[in-house]
Length: 372
Length: 75
Image (cartoon, rainbow over all chains, first blue to last red; front, side, top):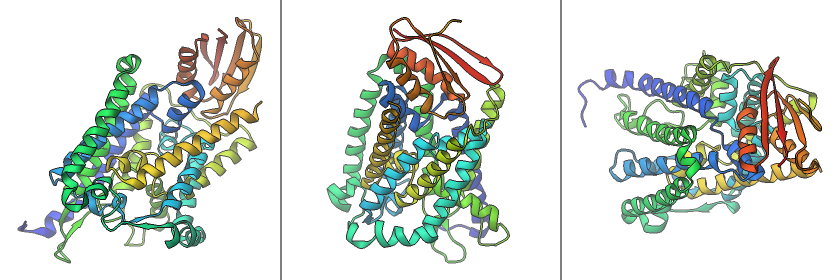
């Protein structure tokens, strides 16, 4: 499509994408604080008390996101074939090891990246320490000393499966031609199965918070994809090629929190470097903390929290480092892979989130056993 | 309020207060009361959900000087 004055339009495109990300993050943070939405908490409820309420909320978010994402994909609103989650290389060892590390880490650090941003907004200083250590560990794993280990071992060619059509399940099963129909079918069946499981529970149907959390988080993920993958797509006036504006990866993105936390630290450190810009992901990180703060403040639940002991501090630091390392190796966190990635029906995302859940469950079992 | 056992979960983050509560209740007999002191805001909802799910009775939840004190009666 020709634009009369592309430079004018694209000049406001990046701020539009970034501010929309900030808005979405703020709503996410507000709702997560209000509803106690937490992936690790959901796993803990199931493992420690066989209570599935928050897990159902989390599954509901996946189902809602899955429906929205695949309808957008089917109708050509957003092209998911170029996203991180459709990568032609399936780094299975990195996904498993990274996912396990992330799962162990979030259990030691009082929650995942998202939960720590929410806790920070509520006045928890421990979470600030967790986020800084996690961000540094992520940078070190992306391009520092651990990056060599990541690319040389965990994501090296002997432990990578090359999939010519990418790793989204519809293209994997039905090829590029049949992908559109397969996408609609697969997403429909999976989402329906999840919705039946979620809503067959009477307590869940009556629980406003869990319903609010599931629907909102799912819709926020869909909105994130729409903003970066549709609104943010335009002709670049310099190259005259279509490009995605406002994201760190220059591809469509949605909610994800470890790499954006790392980019936030980098931005703070190198802001005068013109190549450093505030992106959609960075904006969501700050939005989450702000939204959570707003809810905590007005509900009078804001309170400063700090470390209790040396053991507590060291557990959180170890957990944070494992999360930063794990998320980069597994290409995402509980939200980035667990909801945003799974909503695209990516095989790698399923592998990563199952590994995260396994790592967290094992850690909780060990914690309980060590007390006996 | 009278209680038979007490533990301090000050400074512990989720899921430790719940894991420790679960462990503490194992060694208690029916009708005994466990007192838990926590500083984690999330533990308020967690303890209520735990009681609801396991059938133990959460006798009271009070906030005092920035700490949460729970009394849980074993079923």
